[in-house]
Length: 172
Image 1 (tube, one colour):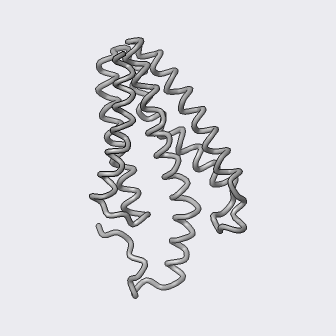
Image 2: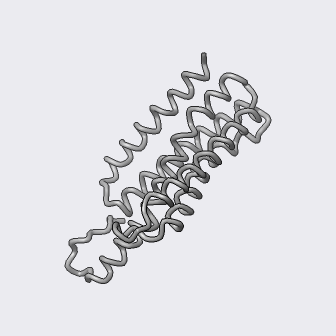
Image 3: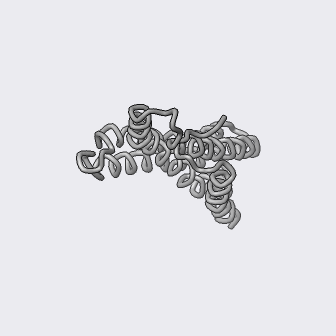
């Protein structure tokens, strides 16, 4: 599947404008939230799992981090501008999208810690993190027109650094 090409002469101005509006008002806030939720919760979640060896403790830290990040990101996006000057659409709608995506991004790799077996929870969470990062890379490729290899590299390196910090802190 090829990425959207806005310079393609076969795509008319209305389609280009509609796509731009969709990306700036919906995709970008969702991507921002997914990236923040997925990455910002990694270190506290995996550090807690490593320090406590208790999957439920890790789950509650992941839940708290996800909820806190979702509320914070949602408010920050909703209050950043009303969209009149920037054309980014309703601040409330962007806040809901960003906050919800942040919560989702943090909770996806937190849910495995509902398992009572820490090793099983960790292995499942590792897999979920990889899938989250690949999904973020694909969204960036598809909607933000970033070359696939470049976006996979950026997302994996960024997520990997934060993931490594969580593992490192959890080993201490």
